[in-house]
Length: 288
Image (cartoon, rainbow, N blue to C red):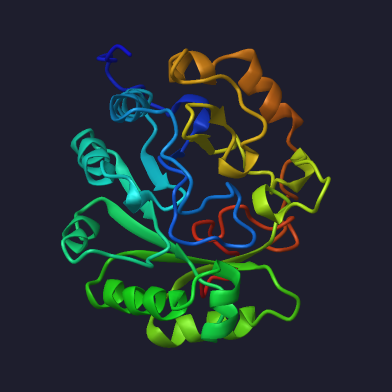
């Protein structure tokens, strides 16, 4: 791929505020509702480090202000810190969406850099229920411990809670997070994508929250461009074949955006259909 050297546009192309970069399918966990069916056996995909750096360069040139490193678990990709460095050097904000199951001590220095925020998922205030959802014994204690470390260090932290199980202690999990000092918390229902689909079920755009293509987009491990990571089954071309600028200005992107039902005007989560990115979308409650 060639390097884009044109100056940034004044406004982000297609109104994209965050470009989600799904840099790997690998993850230490096997969450029962995982949108990408990630696991320890998955791969980093076909995108090379050079491909990812080119996408980040193009995003900056197109005026997109922020990238999000996501997976799978982005920190298992050996180049995740170099991608962060590259994005920051171009003036982009970077959010690392990690399960916080494993955080090497040297990584905290990266999380503490100006322009970097951290996001994670949390499921319950009880270890057994949280671990049941993640499929990994001990994940509750390790994630909670790293949440507390992030707060101690003053790192901007966003937490999403997905309601997966009948009777899940979502309210109690939120209260627990509040008690330990987390202020940015949002929730979403489980969506029929990836492992959350029932046998024989196919993904549909009706399962989207309405924000895909509207302020966000995603590049998947194989290079496909999608409206967001949950809309992965509806790609609009591939960045290994076509540059981002051409994809965002193409008919496929326009058609996808037009086919996604918009969020309900004036409604708050979950009455607006919920939110596909619960760690980040602002809630209507001013106390949020």
